[in-house]
Amino acid sequence: MSLKGKIEAIIYAAEEPVTAEQILAVLNEGNATESGEPALDKDAVRAAVYELMNDYAAADRGMEIRAVASGYRMATKPEHHDVVRGFAKSLKSPVRLSLQALETLAVIAYKQPVTGPEISEIRGVDAGGVLGTLMDRKLITTAGRKAVVGRPILYRTTREFLLRFGLNDLSELPSMEEFEKLASETLAQPGLFEEAAPEAAGAAQTEEPAKV
Image (cartoon, rainbow, N blue to C red; front, side):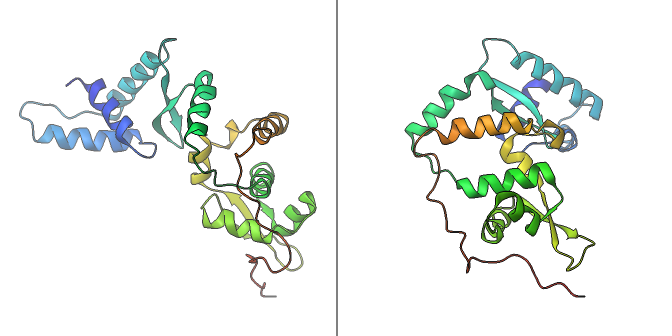
């Protein structure tokens, strides 16, 4: 099997983005068991990955290899998202985020690091319960405490957030206007969001009492 074929198979089989280092380790381990196969280096792996990316860039290919979260993974091309979304809807696949969670996640993504009170002020409602949900799903994490009275907890997005949204890093976030347009188009489609969980008092709080 060619080097490109081996790398293509690894990227396809990986559930998460696979790095050049991981690919190199797997290939060299396999070469060690095959007589006469020289050890590869990272440059050779990256060159083969770039060739694959160019191959998949052809107009008649529905998939592409993307750089995501410091690794590589296969994904459908943006121009085919509508047909894939239609197929996914036909399967009635559950969507995991409520509107409230999506709004809160957007605030954190664009304002991070940001505190719970700041999020609540921007959204106009208490965000405590939704923060707990986003923490449970590993889309956000804590980032220390802000140096103000009460020292509230700061929140930021995680690597899991990058993975879920197909971003290599935060610089690839669309503009706020583009995000709002995307969200409004998505919300216009019935049945895409779960029943929103109440955010009233009594929801689970994520803030711990600060030590003064």
